[in-house]
Length: 74
Image (cartoon, rainbow, N blue to C red):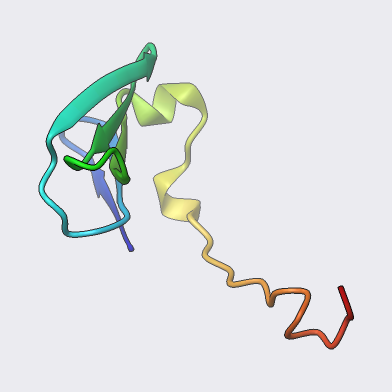
């Protein structure tokens, strides 16, 4: 996964995979979701990111262990 902030366009892009984008939908104003041919989500773009309260200089990534990894029986 890649997170890219374009300062010149104030656009935040999150790329989930390297698959080819087949279709894009603007789900909400300024939020564009890109899908591959099978309908799987490939990437997401947030236009005017800083005006939507996104602070690109404070992006945090955290991988949370699954319940199984914590030793909790399901």
